Length: 67
Image (cartoon, rainbow, N blue to C red):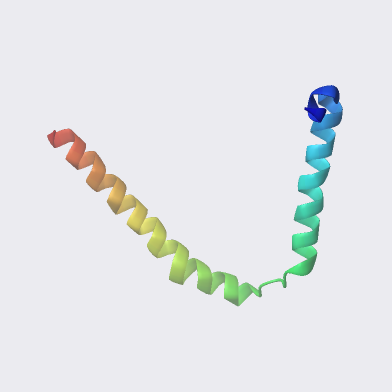
C-alpha cells in the first residue's frame, strides 16, 4: 500500500491535479456546442426528462400513500 506512505495533503493535491487535468483535456478536445444546439437540447431532451421525473416522482408518492 504505497498510498499509505503519502501524507494526506499531498494525496489530496495529486487527486485534485488529476481531476483538473482530465477536465482541461476534455474541454480542449471536445468541440463547443453552439447556443442554438444547447437550446434545442434543453427543449427536446431536458424538458421532457424533467417532466417525466416530476410525474414518476408524483406517482411513487401517491402509491406509497396508498400502502
